[in-house]
Length: 202
Image (cartoon, rainbow, N blue to C red):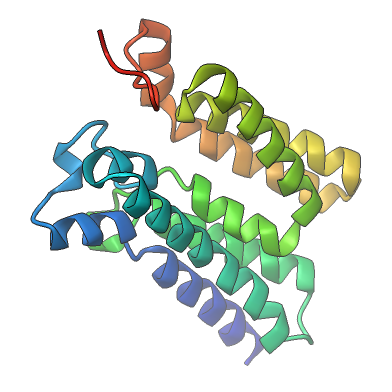
């Protein structure tokens, strides 16, 4: 029975994360977001295609996808190890977003979904990371650069605030995954061709 609960939580988290919010929203407007801008289905690219209000809405929904299972699973199953259950739910929901079964296992980069999950399990480290994201974005206007630096700062913030070895190892893995998903952005940043928010191309 216990094994079934773990598998069920992981499966439910994956399926929730796999809902391709940005793709569905754009498709409803007759747009294939995969053929616009960076080709990513996440909020930043949706913002380029449909404007800031819809982009922000997609961002919040993707964050909610991450928050719900990580917050709800320990509440429904308090008899299970809380930390491990949160980690399993987080990994599954981010995997669902990044490799959605509805789009041939191609999805977003998982930043908003990861942030939502971390809000439920590592609130203070997340707030520190969001501050880092804001500073880098304000200085550079690159969403991708801000996300990469924030991802790298996550395990450091977790170590300084919690000193929990399990969470530290977990956030290192989550950070590496997030940075890896930005490999195309890193290439464009190095080439000087990455898009900036609020900066018109000359």
